[in-house]
Image (cartoon, rainbow, N blue to C red; front, top):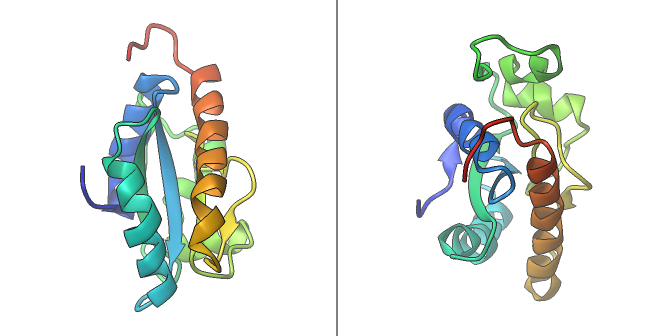
Length: 154
């Protein structure tokens, strides 16, 4: 996978991360249309990390936080768990619910769509951003590994 995906790809990425049990994580970038800083974060940080063979592997989804169209994601069993309610909301509603007001904002998510750890807000310096991103990815790796479904294989 060489490019970040749209919100409609969240079900595929979440299912992959659920099965991988920590060897694969999902990262979201809250973005705005024509956001030059978002483009820089994507080009300089997220796409290189997605292409990397470093563990864990990373899938990145771009959420346009002005988008009012609902995202529909179902769990493996076809039932939406109550904690995944946001997944039927629009990116705009989701951003409001999680106080995401600035783009770019980058964070890993859980299978229920909740941010894991503190988000990376803005992009003031490429010097340290990569290290901060790796910290968030490591946190997500521990989360996904600890929440691995029974019988999953990597």
